[in-house]
Image (cartoon, rainbow, N blue to C red):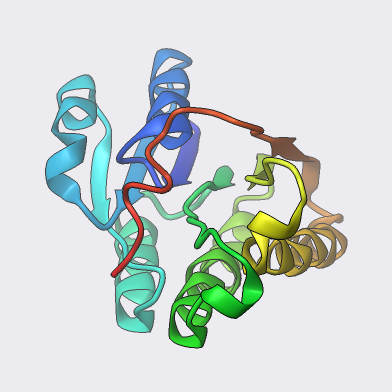
Length: 187
């Protein structure tokens, strides 16, 4: 039986590369993102495309339910989806900051809530990843830096709850990379 991996933010950059890596290693991979059209190449490689908008709870629930119905479990969860609104705190509209927190924190937390029972039921999980998108701190980062505090705390809480059945957890700091994070802002 193939191991099951779920990768959010799979339409480009690190998420897309992660999907390809898991496919090459023989995983059954659910590639999740808002824009399915950008993942046609991943479908051609064998990934199962999942529509997922982390600002929309029904979308998150539907994605998790589909994975549960088709695969019955999750062995690897990669929380990669995220974006940043760059600028000084006084320049970033609060509505934009709220959307950013919805994607980078609350959406990931909701997906974990739905995935954890499937991971626990499998009793043979490999890993759960959080990708840390910080690219250095400074005044220009503003609310982007602030919204990264809670995902790291969320990761630690998840690790404690999952410890009895979980072999390993990893947090990877992506650093600077060319994935269009600025270009593909929600909005």
